[in-house]
Length: 491
Image (cartoon, rainbow, N blue to C red; front, top):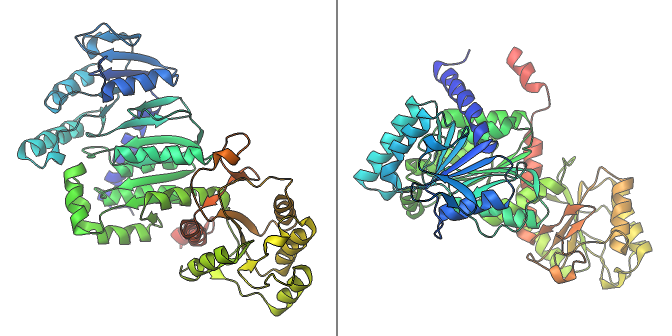
């Protein structure tokens, strides 16, 4: 039996999920407060146009009739098409009257870019946000914001953010919800690594729509395979719990950067998005753990964990071997593996060490981490035999292959040939190339594309990579066997 609160939460989530469809898939957009002058509004309008949004576009500002080749109207009432999404870039004191006008004209969803609400930490700002909340509760129009950065759907070429650094788009399966607009720029390093983006939304102060509603939407979205989040506080734990449960049922990992571990930061959060839930950090971290939401502590760890899910499909266990041409890198990685709960640095059996000793040069070692020595870099036969011995042993679940720099492994190189043969003969062993350094090495890339092996991105940075792999293994290990939850519910 579901509680009244739980049923109420499900009803609210269902309504908002229906309306959020118009946030990501509008047929008509109106940018209210657009101007030809340099501004966030001008940047948003420019991106909507330049990235080829395939719906109808209107600017709204009584001072102009045309802005950058886009027709501009005096008011939303004058726009000659159905507006599914209105983006508001006006002063905070004008928001409520514009919302009334949007509702009269059947605008389905409104994204409020404007700031000047409770994040000001003033009585006036709090009153404005309370009025906005009351309006949203009584209206059929869905409100996202205020104090947001915009929305993206790369499967629709919808780029309605003020980011001027976007040079290309890579559609894919990663969707995100961020309380901070700047965190949306995480799409740049991800796309730079060859990881595709589906949808991104920024929620700001979350006066109405919260992180929970967006996660619930992504849980059912067929174009979303993974959910990432920057969160300053969970405002509605009941709905959040329901949403995370739906995502988990559908096999979609949630990776969250939840800030606020220290009191000084919690104070800053209040001034950033007016999130009072920042006071409950420890309780929320426990909730995230119970919900199997993957928590990270930095943007770098978030990025590396996303890449790890792309390259590390469900491993059969946590036994890890590391091989490289550098004893130093092996020691660094081994220290990291041994310090992380959930990973096991395999101690090779005497039989495997003996077999490796017959193949490798005398100055190489035959223990884990495996230092193959620089002399074997070009020896296809030695590399191939060594990797096959590791696969045949049955002693490892993952082989991390160390590189000095984030550079592609060519399929026809000695390392590429050895690893490809290992994956073909022993698909039960997950092979993951890891570079010691991270960053860009484009001068070494023939086509200027991201560093890859076998069509997949490389992990970068030893510590971040190993932590990311551990998170992937733990998430897969904690997933219930299909049908188990249904069986338990019936007992």
